[in-house]
Image 1 (spheres, rainbow, N blue to C red):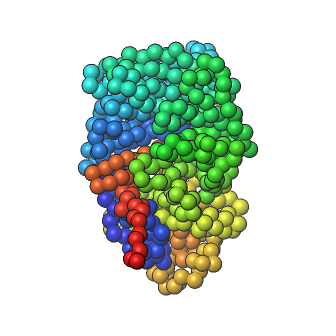
Image 2 (image 1 turned 180 degrees about the vertical axis):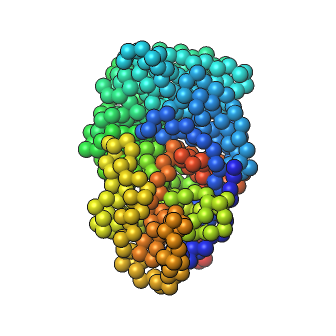
Image 3 (image 1 turned 135 degrees about the horizontal axis):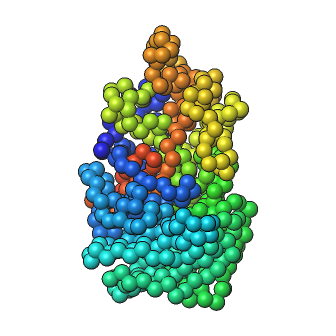
Length: 474
């Protein structure tokens, strides 16, 4: 199901239309929501949305063993193919799909074998190959020539595998490198001369394809825990690597002695704030997107790194809410805010309560301890930050009073959102993210956000991102 964002009454939140999209020059107002099921087969691996390189406005995502296509304009979905295993990661280029995962034989520990799947749309050829002795956490695909594609495969057995692929789907994996840690992600630079890889360690690696068999590599030490994603800027000179601790480091490949910029999570050291996926925008958009484990996506201007915004998903993507009481099919728009304000409000809330739901739990814990009702009860006593207290209290009084006059068993599920904590509708979001993708569309370019509830599409304000020279008159 596709739901366009509807005009919502932001008055209960003290937000006018302009405030609701503060500093939102990165994105056009309004987004589209598509109710589809994305299967997450490992709770930390969340790069499960990839663009269709042949068809604009279309992305692929896995559901169980199937690969499905979603049209981001119409919401139409179609099963595109299937593997013999449930993919932990997928990529597509020129109609050639690659997927990674694991085939568990059901025997003793250690008998699992890494799975590498390849599917060629033009011929219908599908292969399920054993690559690596443990789970394959990441796969990539890049084109070297009309007769050859290459794929990087990251395995928990500490090996980075290099696969050569022909357009017909023939695969050879003759090169590999043991990097000494379970590997979670790797990226090949646009000029195909440099690989950046990260894994279950505070370090990451820079190496070159022609040296894979020699063991030559640069090991860059950091103080952060477990790298989960890497990405190259289209210029090939800048790359980013993200860590579970909620830190992303941006480097210039010409000088990797220190990062040129550091991006922090809004909830550092919390499971909900763990960084999972990063993607540079293509073309001239010059943006870096980073997903937190739950409910938030960072957008960083890579031209000067001065503008940093955060997309905050609501507690409920579709249905009646304090934002709009129009009915169950209303799509509740996300909130876009400057990074500093999001962090300030989060810090304020956490100082007001000892237990702020799942965002307070460490990233090492797999599931949140408190259920929604417990979180609601604690947040009822939370007061607004000083900035929000200056808003007209009359904006909230009607909602709060109407709820207080309703019998407890008849109150709306968002009765905790009152004049004292209107932002709880976004702070309490428990929607886990499952992927990010930048893609070219019929109207420019877009950001697709995969989550446990479906896919959200935002159009990027490409025209506003363009730079035009100015001329003086002599």
